Length: 326
Image (cartoon, rainbow, N blue to C red; front, side, top):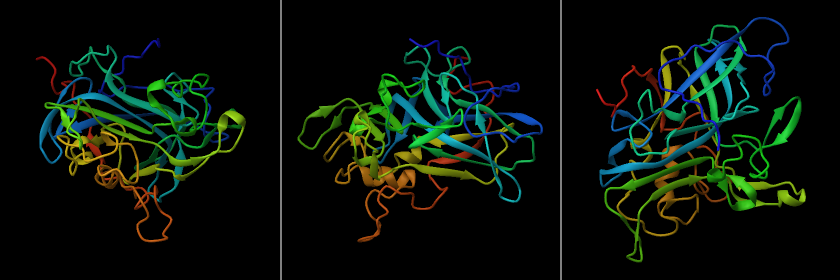
């Protein structure tokens, strides 16, 4: 069992870091600490841990958050001229190379809303970058094919979860196809069971996204290639990490999904082209589920680079968390 860090939603001051793997810092010159907060919002309110959710999907259901985790990577700060400067992540149980895992369930594994004493497991990335004047932020969602650690390329998406370093060793984020990983895991327990196409019922409606249509066996040394990458980038042209945070809007994610029923395939969406629930989910992520036109070859690619409707900039949360006791 990991010794999970107690990270809250309030801003923190991060000291300077040294010995960091990932994107190289400038060969000389001053560096500055970087700390970027993330949050989940639903129905206009901050949520997380076991907080009750409201007004989800086309049926406007209440639900419990069963799971909420996703990988992010490739953080870059943007200056006024549009130049991108990589952030070098601190290496920890939550960050490896330039990849981090965000986990919005509570550290105790219970069903209570997040509070300062019961925070999300990890809702922040920390690192350092060359000192400079930055006005924006860019990052990607997913697990990259590989990253650079100590000057050497290391496989990320397709590697053995049992021997991989943290946070790539999380079994709950393993993706069955060719030993890849889930990039995004959201699971919701609606107030009433989900009615499946055959009339049976399910407790949980899920969004599990990773690369699909993959070929190659990493266990035997084969290079794995995936026809549908299902990674996407997020560009925030105006972002101040001192006063703002990155918000993922669950209301937008599920705006055109019906959590009361499932018309076929996996309950919810797990990336299958023929799953009736996946069209709405992929549109919310900003991804093409299938080719946008016959022969386009853009299945699993972002509709517009840098744009994902579920992400937005929000003000840094005050000390009080939605659902916390007064």
